[in-house]
Image (cartoon, rainbow, N blue to C red):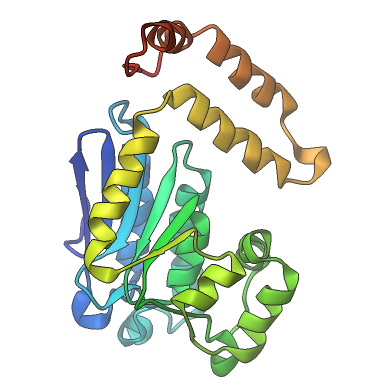
Length: 263
């Protein structure tokens, strides 16, 4: 549960959903929404039944269209208010980026500014063919912090990162696919079914193996001096010592679908 009805969550089997619920403003995000985002992710972190989390926006117009400018006078009019707002944004982004389980951004329509930032915190991005992307910071005179720029650059590379920020223009789903920003582009009418089925494929695999790959991949992109190689080695060893490893071998030999428990 959260303190705002602008953020929703639900479970569907092994899938968890986090929904930005402000469709009348294209799912623009307020202070309380950023705070709630981090809280919902932390709830799913503790839920052993949830193996994959899908993050999306309500309605058919937008994933997330950035900050709710109508709230700026209330939420960002003083230095103290700005600091609180930035802390909430960092809490939301950080919770998604550091989440130990797979995350999928299900993107339909506008994915702008903070929406792009949120999407880059997810492991996989799947969008509808009518999606629009952009970071308008240069049109507003905003600074963009190192972590956000790095997350984007790690995905699309330095040249596309500069193009996205330099031009501050909106680009379409096919351009996003070419840049490598999104993994898949699907027809809008098929998006929810496609993402649910895709997430269930991931959830049906051995959770300890999947989570270890997320951990190791994230360590790769850290500076070498900050990499936790012991955590990587321990995660791999835990896979080989797990009941799921036994189940995987037994299912393979019996030519049946494995029933993984995450233990």
